[in-house]
Length: 151
Image 1 (cartoon, one colour):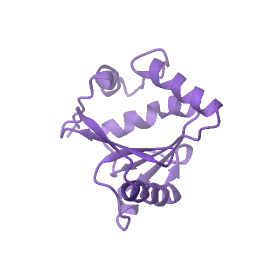
Image 2 (image 1 turned 90 degrees about the horizontal axis):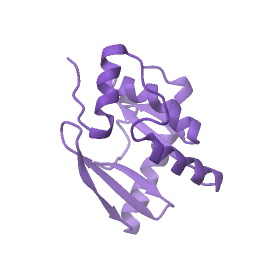
Image 3 (image 1 turned 45 degrees about the vertical axis):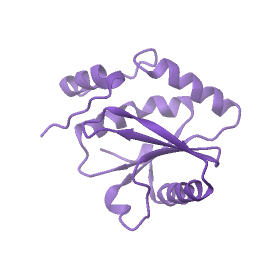
């Protein structure tokens, strides 16, 4: 069964990947021209950008695609790790995807069941920030660096 994915700014590239099994890693395409310079500028200022992805195995076609395009995140300066979901079973994790910003703000990202963007919410609640920070650090310690994780 092929997984569905409906995030508009990736849909065309993802569909091409499904046909060819080759990811578009041209940084001038799709949503990358906005994201990559933002990351590179932040990293140049000394900001550390870590991204942890918790994935079910065997991975879906979309995760294969995401793994293939991660080279662009790395080139911009992000540090990316992958954690198989089976290795996260004993971790207390927030129920939504999130970004922890400057150790003081959490942005929760919400998606529909088909992968469409459904919005975000922000909180600076110290308890929520602490929960997310602890969860992220626990995942980070167990996760596999991108260059060592194969799909």
